[in-house]
Length: 354
Image (tube, rainbow, N blue to C red; front, side, top):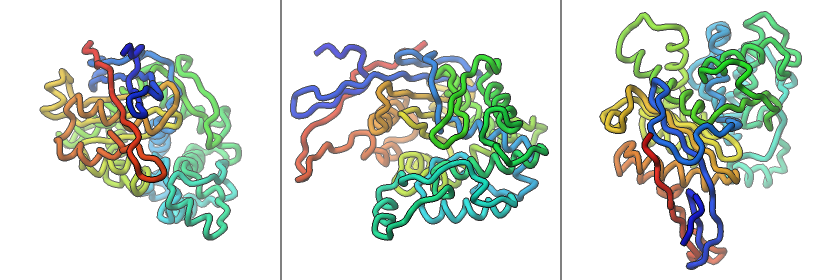
C-alpha cells in the first residue's frame, strides 16, 4: 500500500482507518542535525514543551533563591500536571512562598488531564479553580519572577509585561535565534507561547541534557546559563511525578530512564526529549547530549506517544527492558467496549540520517 509519507497508520481489521503525518528532528549538543523525518524546520508551536525554556527565564531572575523554591517546585514550573492533590497542594505552597494568592493567577480551572482525578471530581461535584490548572506551577513561577525583577504582578501574563519581555529574550537565546525569528501566540493557560522551527525545540532539550552532563563532569566554573539548564534537567528527572502525574507518559518516561532522559509534552501533539551523553548517543554520531523533537500534524496525542516511543526504539535509547515500560503507549491494544481487539498500528517511516 502507498503510505503517502505517513509516520503512523492505524488499522481496523485489515482496513486503513487513519494515517498520521509527522515531523522529527534529532540534534546533538552542538545543534548538529543528525536524523530527520518530514520537515525539521517546520514552524511549530511548542506549547507546553516550551515550559523548561520559560522556567529558565524564571531561574535567571533569581526567584528560586529569593522565594526558597526547591527542585520539586521547579519541576512543577515545567509541568503540565494532572491536577492531583499533590499538584494543587504544591501550587498553594508555592503561592505562599511567593507572597501571592490564588486571585493573582491569570490561568483558569479546567477538567483534569487525569481520568482518575476527573472521576473523583465528578463524584464530589468539584469545581476546579486556577490552582487546579495544569499550568499552575508555571504561573506561580512568573509571579515570582516578576517580583524578582521589580515588576508588578498585575498583568504578568501579557506579552508587554517586563517578565514576558524577559521570557521572550531567554527563549530566543535558548533556541539560538534572534527574537524576531520567534513567533508568539496565546496559550490555553493565557500565557504567551512560542513558535519556532521544530529542530530548535530539539536544541533546547539537548541543552538541558548537556547542562546536566557538563556540571556533573566538573566543579566548574560554569556559566549561570549552564547551571540553570542543569537544575531544570535534574528537577524534571528527579520529580517526574510533578511534571505530569501517575500513569502519564512524561512521568513514566522519566521514571523509566532514571535521570538519563527528560521529556515534556506540548498540547496538540508536540514533544521534546533530552538524552544525556552515553555510548548510545556517540554511536548515533552525537557530540555530547542528544535532543529529539516530534510533531504530529493532526494533533493526536495518543499517536504522538506511539511515535516518540518508536523513535526511541529505533535510535536505541536505553535498554529493551527500559523501553518495555513504554509498551502500553508504544503499541496500545486497540479494543472496543467489549474488550475485543479491533486493530493495530504500523510505523511505515524511515528516519533519515543527515
